[in-house]
Amino acid sequence: MVKKESEINIKIGSDENNNPERLSWIATDSGIQQDREVKAMMLSFWDVKENNSMRIDLWNKDLMVEEMYYFVYQNIISMSEAMVRATNDQELAQDMQDFAAFFAKKSGITK
Image (cartoon, rainbow, N blue to C red):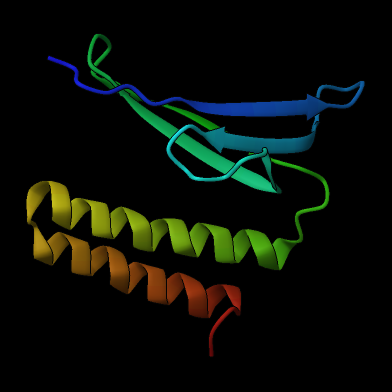
């Protein structure tokens, strides 16, 4: 039985070519009182009916390449942490973190 419901609202403002110009979000449980503007987002869902993941990846034209590298790097780390919490598979999570370190070095965000 669901005891509480929360909402996450995402707003996407696009230009005449349907390219994202403004991305913002707000969540009922975030403590934030107004939309929080962002330059990029990755949203993933596990669709139990299709037994497949569904994704929305968006970024605006103001996102610099280096910012995208940091964004992807931090998402890889976050996925490895979620992997441990969900499966307790420490070895696979460590492999993901090793790849994150390789990615960071290869992209130039770390030495």
